[in-house]
Amino acid sequence: MKQLIFATISFLTLAALPAAAQPAFSGTNYSGTYDCQGENQQVGKYRLEVTLKLNLVSSTGRIGVYEYTAETENSVKFYGNAIVRGNQMAASYVIDTSRRKDEPTTGLALIRRDANGRWTFINHYFEPDDFGGNYGTETCVMQKKKAAAKAAE
Image 1 (cartoon, rainbow, N blue to C red):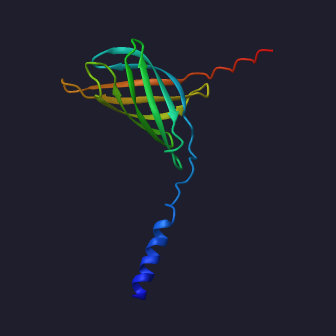
Image 2 (image 1 turned 120 degrees about the horizontal axis):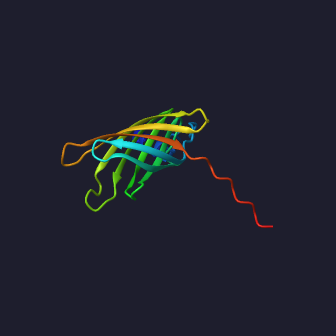
Image 3 (image 1 turned 90 degrees about the horizontal axis):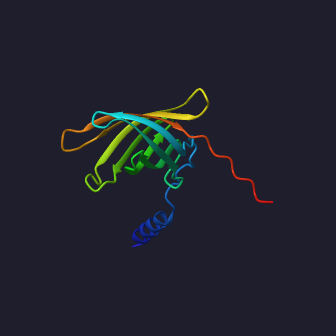
């Protein structure tokens, strides 16, 4: 009986301990808006804007988790997530049109600084469709941050 009580108390004590905390995010924050030029087999050349927003709750150590949104020059929108380790990014997002809603796209990219010191990446992606899929590439450069407006005096 003493062993059962001891085992029960030990189990309850272990169950009450908090889960091991994940280390705080220590990677580079690539959050921002990027101007992109893309090209794929079906559309040809196009322009779009990609926004990466760091999710600090889900990011840990050198792993950054991001909300990934994009909008093309003709207002086609994509929504999803990206994960970054060091300068390697994988992204998964869906197109939001009535004809192709929730169709997944997967991309891989390397993030680097350009000659002007801005973050840049080249996203190689694949989007499936009814005709065998579509491969493409997007070259993206972070927009310069806009200076905060002066407070009215």
